[in-house]
Image (cartoon, rainbow, N blue to C red; front, side):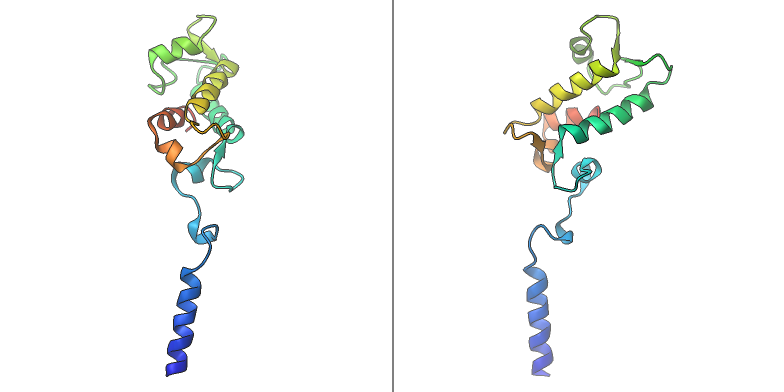
Length: 133
């Protein structure tokens, strides 16, 4: 009986001592949804992939651009105007991704080129998420 308890205690200690990188510590939330390389962070390449997919879904009139109406409240009128350098009232895919890149940079205060869960949960991170999902 004592051996069984000892083995049980050792087994439990082994489970609780697993490193944070184990499958039990897998990312959740926005990081998990965007993190295609499973490194626990999101980089600009991963953000751009998701933003491109969103652009394609929102671009409903097949003209190759999105307007403020198609963006459905994801960006403010002020931010839209800033992202529209030719002032044509629409964003091409390149203009949209330039805006996304700027939002990514704003959400990355440590300038390490990646966003973790805390950075994505910030006000600037949430603004970025609105144009990627």
